[in-house]
Length: 253
Image 1 (cartoon, one colour):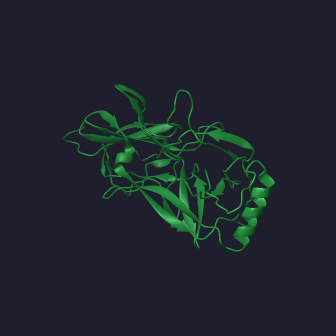
Image 2 (image 1 turned 120 degrees about the vertical axis):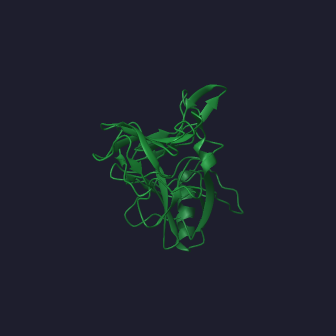
Image 3 (image 1 turned 45 degrees about the vertical axis):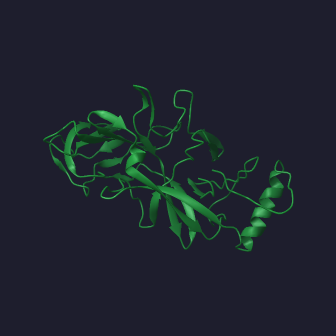
């Protein structure tokens, strides 16, 4: 996450301590602001995970830099890999589908003018974006649910929710209104994020879920460490505030 930082004088950006000091000084004066970008599903679709009443939308890495890395609790994470160059985003080359969906792993919260980004947890509930009929159910700790939107045309449009623990009452052929709890997110292990793998298929072909979403923005009063968080400054022009699975919104997300 890159936080835009501008000043009149030239600073040696390799000196992290200087950047940290200046940022803390500005935030004490409440003069440091940021524009936070987030994604939501377009009407009439519903957002499948809404953990809080303060939920604004889903945080994703920059589209032009899906491989952006960051550090949480001393561990460095990177969205993209050699096999997944576009990280959490949909990826298709010709007829080859590399990643048939979108991985939603973080969400944006705004409280009293301040913005925070949270990772999803295994207690977060998943609901349908559109009503339909449950077509398939994969049970277990790393399960999945598919929902057909038009039962009379099962190959018209349907969606899948992967990496979830389906509820005991979720079964094939039952109605799935947008109010239905499909289950909770599964824990895929320490080497990856708890996330929802969301896929949309039209005519049996996977399509980019971002085409059903829109990007929005909000202005945050300032970017300062919360009382219960610590922070790290990354080397270079990026300043990243992290700890306890909570960090502050960047200006260039």
